[in-house]
Image (cartoon, rainbow, N blue to C red; front, top):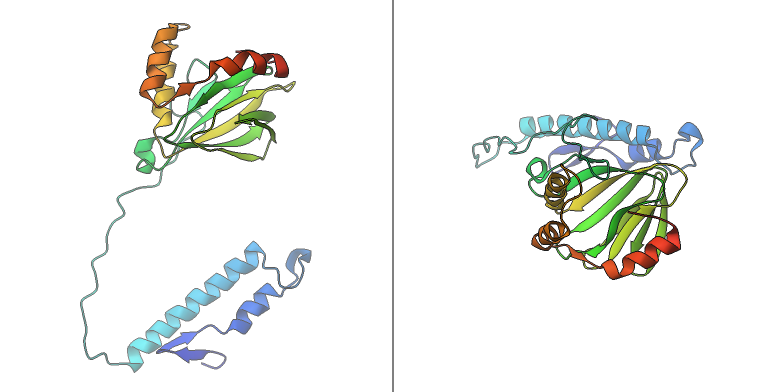
Length: 235
């Protein structure tokens, strides 16, 4: 097997093979830059090399102690696909529910929101048990965290850390659309329960406050009037 180095009974892919792929100028990329396609080629070659090396090691060596192979374990989680129109669409805030805690073993939850021009997506509030990530798909979403406002355009990502007062809105001339990710999961349940309250029209204020308190949401409505006036947005 010329061109390969033997290490611990295995044939190993030489680093010059990596350099061959990385050094290619595929797609006009500079030398030393590995494109995704080149990386895939390198990984396939490396995997094939490891397979051959493993077979040779099995023939060449006679282990003094052999142990039975571990039984294969079927993963407890399965792939999850959610079609564009699947799952619940709430009657408030044009919210579509996507990943739930049950899908991800509690790791994250997610929703998709549509914000009309001049509207607030979330009033100033904070929570201490989870972070939120916003991925803007269309338009621009303005996000307040503490005292900093960031305009996040389509394609942008933004993290709202737990423990800091935050809010977001669309002050642009057109619709904005974004994905909200909750880490860990759980906040999507609050949003579902909030959607329940809006099923038959605007709910009682006390009902919303009680639900928020039960779900780690602390409102800071003293900031709302100034925000609405400064950015010309409404509820």
